[in-house]
Length: 382
Image 1 (cartoon, rainbow, N blue to C red):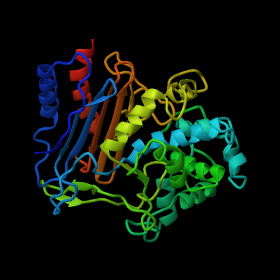
Image 2 (image 1 turned 45 degrees about the horizontal axis):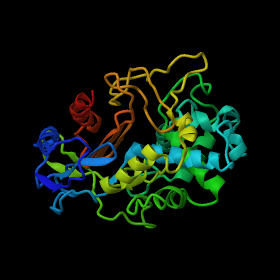
Image 3 (image 1 turned 180 degrees about the vertical axis):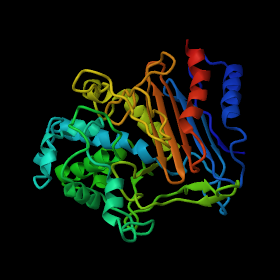
Image 4 (image 1 turned 60 degrees about the vertical axis):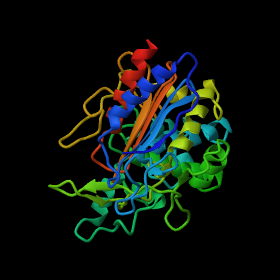
C-alpha cells in the first residue's frame, strides 16, 4: 500500500506520540485508495516549514509495478498556472512587462478585441478570451480532427486560433470565466518578452534557483520527464485502469504543461513561505481577489456536466491561485484536472500548513482529500 514513508524533523512541541497519531490519521485518509498494482497518489503534508508526512500509494504505470514515491513526477495540469503567474510577476518586477499592458501592445497583429484585454485580465480570468478548445472544434467542423493525441496543438497554434476570432466572449473585467486560453497566452507572453522559451525561462528564473531539479515544462521530443507517472482512467463499466496519458491539448504549456514531484514542490512551498523569488509586497497582487468592474465578486457560471469544484459558487481568485477561505482559515489553493491526472496544492499560510495531493488516475478528488487532511491539522492549530 505505502510505497514510501519519510519523516522530517518534527515541529517544535510535537511529541513522538502525537506525531505517530497524526501520521496514522493522515494515512487513514488515503489507505485503501490504491494497491501495488494500480495507479495512485503521492501525498505531501507540511507544517511550520517541515515535512510532516510524505508517502506514495500505488504505481507509476499499469504493468510496470514501479511504486510512486517522492521523486515521481506527475503532470500538474492547472497547478501549472501558479508558475506561469510567477513568471509574469518576475517580468513585471524586471520592468519588462506591465499588468495593465494590452494584448495588442505585446502582439501587434492580434485582432481589435485584444486592445482592451490586459495582462491582469489574463492572470485573473476576466479577459473574455474565447475558449481555445471550442475554437479547435470549430476549426475541425465537417472534417476529421486537426489535432489528436498524437498530433497535439501547440501554444503558437492556440495563439493563431485566438487571432482568427473577431471578438471575445464578454467585455474584459465585466465577468469571470476560467480560461485556459488566457494562461496559454501568458506562456507565449513570457517567451515573447523574455526572448527565451517558456520552459527555459521557468528553468532559469524559478526551477534552477530553487533547485527544483526534476521539474520541467514538458515538450515531447525536446526534453524528458524523469521518474514519470503516467495518467490513467477506469474503463467504462468496470474497475480496470487503462493508460490515458495524453490528449490533443496535452502539449500546451502555460495552462498545464509542468511536471513535478513532492521533493521539488516542498522547495516551491518553502520559496512561497519565505518570499525567495518575489517579496511580500510583490506578491500582493497575486493574493488579492479580483473584483468585477461593478465591484462585485465574480461567480463561476455552471452548466450541465460541469465538474469543476467551484462551479456555481462565488469565486475568489488572484494570479494563479484560488483564494477563498476554508472553515474560517485563509487559504490559497489550486487544482489540476487533465486526462488521467488529478492534482491539488492547498496552502494555509497563517497556520503554515500545506497539503499536496498528486494523482495519476482520474477517479479521485485531490482537493477533497486535502481538505480531510487539513481538518486534522487545522483543528490542532486552533
